[in-house]
Length: 285
Image (cartoon, rainbow, N blue to C red; front, top):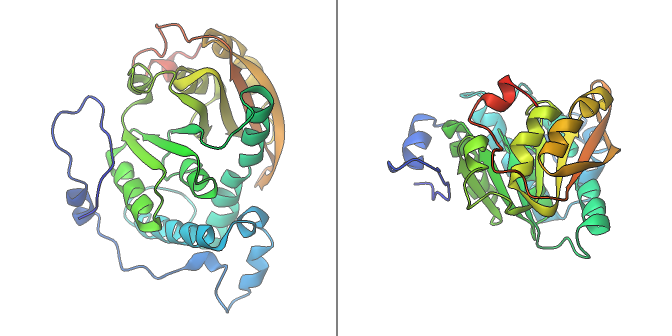
């Protein structure tokens, strides 16, 4: 049975990860190795599109391989990603997740601390573990918490964490609006990250209550986020933060250059935020 480190705030009944795994059983791994280590089919051409992956240490690459294998297998039974091919997962998801490491490091060292070694990171709306699980593999000294509202996805995350042997990850199941009001998590993290979750007005209310004063919120966005950022100024300010920078990252999506939106938290978030579950998305600030 899978050893669970999942936390389920507000749920008193015991939760059996093994039960979910039994019902969501997938075929034995085909060891796809992400189409990067195969000796056939032009595998070497794939590697040139993933320079950040190639820069990882060998054991980290193996952890990524195991994670991507699991993602594609479980994706046959549940909705984790629209991407079906290993090479595309590497280019669109893994490489894109790795691309926000330099902005996090640079901004944290410039504005938060003289060291970004053992920092705590929360990935809000982690879904299939992007970017949080990839960040945890790339930065093993970081303590990464994956927040996801869907239990089945949390089961996948636990499976992937155990399969890849990633020891610096905790999976938390719950609505982020509830977690943001839980004193165990509120204003606890050095950095909050989010990718492909919601627009900036909503993300600000989801993420910034979890960030300590003096910490960062980093949103991975597409090629042209200027209007979205402008519309979110009130929401960011209401959470006690300010926009630090909008910087291009070394990753390209299907519509062009990707960006990282970075906010610095200067004051505590008022206790009225985040509002009740569903409200931030229905009534953005």
